[in-house]
Image 1: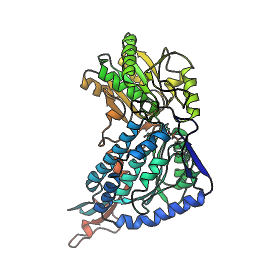
Image 2: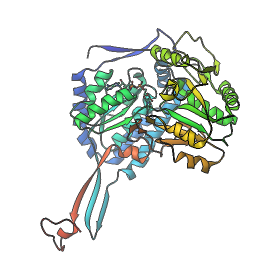
Image 3: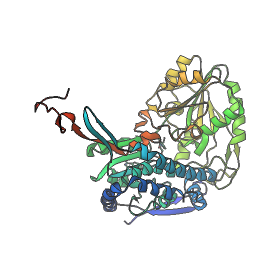
Image 4: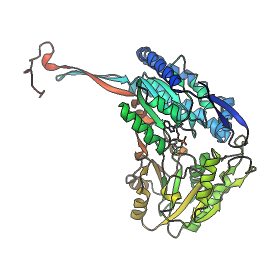
Length: 469
Ligand code: NAD
């Protein structure tokens, strides 16, 4: 271990927040071997004890110093960072509550024989996570993995490695290890022969590289990738203040750098002006662009100078920009990009066709519901979606036809989530699920033990080469 990665505050250029040591291949090897060695005794530890470790760690998450650290390294408003820490604790407790039922052995003893289904852990799990919600996205892997009897090696993003590393150190002896670095460190981890499962959240490019490497190792991988979520406002949708406040933050939370942000807005033709007025009025109420440590800030800077440049170029690439919200800071001080609504674009514009991952969102008009459904489902991504209507049954009927892993009704993003609802994409947005019982079962393989009735005491036997009837 020789090199270090510095993290600068994206809201205050030149301010060093902290640094982490880069793990090279021997460091990764040592971490995986230790995780592998610890795993067998952890798997034999009773489930009640395993979930107690989750509860104990989660009890320390309401930590103001870490919320401030997370805000300084990620550029997310400090109130959001407090929320992410608290929610991560809530999630770990939810896993602790559900795991005994979800991971229980299932034993059947009947006329067909005796069958045991057991939920066996994989072993050492590699978790590779992005910067935009570094704590919850790590806990979504660590919580279920530990509950199921795995150990974990986490490689956080070098763009927000500090707060999450501190929290990962609170899970007790050797159960969770952290290695820092960029793609090379991640590849050394994913390609390690003692890694038995990979859990990745991030962008498509890294997802393809990790999926390919895991495939070569015959290591199963959960891939939670990007999205280009449509928000479809049906003809009867009401543009109330509350609804518009939720939609605006569904677009611009974390400066739009959220996998499940609303990234395309479809409104009925003829209602564009009404929508634009309602949306801009809502932005004046709920968007305050400012320093993440200022309590009134709701939208901070973007993550890097490169991201700011890319998003400004998208805003300048066509259409009519409508700047949104209030500015409460010196925009030159950090990587600030003013939240913007773009009108007058067609579906081939890059900001519509691709994931923009930043504080700009296109407003698009449609004529019929069949047409908007086809446009919403176009493209390779299928993470989330939302449908807005005064009639809930109508919204659900429409939602059944989305090509999306999850659909929110009359909201979008964080406010629409449920711990019990599995989360993940279809098409090129990835595969595998987090949250819900399925998110726990991702970390266990079902193995069986079977005593066929024919060969149990008193059974009638069977011809040596026969199939069972
Ligand atoms: P990223 O893909 O650049 O990085 C994610 C992680 O992968 C980092 O830890 C990075 O160091 C590592 N990495 C990059 N290349 C690698 C390689 N070749 N081998 C191994 N590791 C590698 O993503 P980001 O910029 O941190 O996050 C943004 C993306 O993540 C967006 O596309 C967003 O939509 C997506 N995302 C998805 C979800 C979800 O749940 N589906 C959640 C959050 C973010």
